[in-house]
Image (cartoon, rainbow, N blue to C red):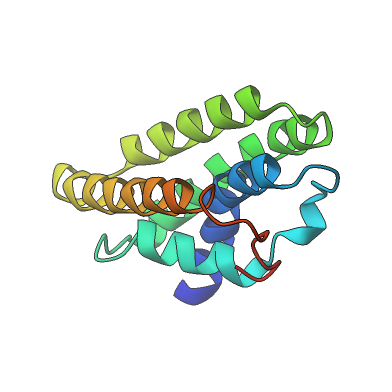
Length: 136
């Protein structure tokens, strides 16, 4: 049950993060089908690592994700990166608001680690001449 909930959260939270960097890399094909679902699961797992959500908190996270899902879909279809980033920030901030102060500390640390990882990835990507493989 926890895995299913975390998988749903992973998909919700991580939809925009890899999609944004991929959209910048891809010059002609930026369809959402190029984003692999297993990557979303890993991202959400990292985001909520050691946060220890209760059943009620998981339900609230799912409701928050479902609230933003149609807006994300519309923004992705319009390829509106600014809106996607804004929605992602709003969604994560709202999810953070559900957490206890101790959980927020862990969540913030995980979020900072993910941001650092993505910045490192983006800083190394432009230096390579070959495009990234679709599974990366």
